[in-house]
Image (cartoon, rainbow, N blue to C red; front, side):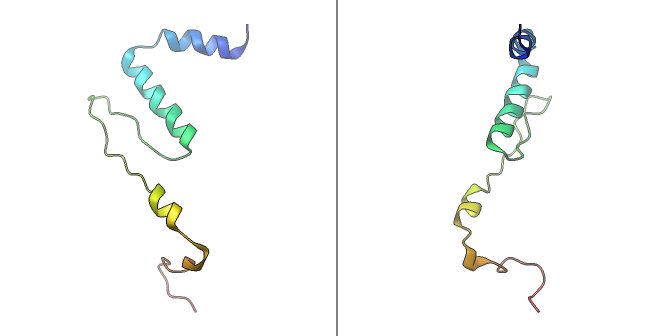
Length: 71
């Protein structure tokens, strides 16, 4: 049996809230951005998606958002 099958067996035994945490973590890893998973109180955190900003950033914008003025 491979390690994937072992992981699947462990995941199938998880409590629903732990499965939700794992699912959120996997989605975070898949998307490659930092998204917190739901809190233990059962409330969902506020999720921020900066993808629109990153998609609109062009090479000619270089230095536009720097904290210090250019020299």
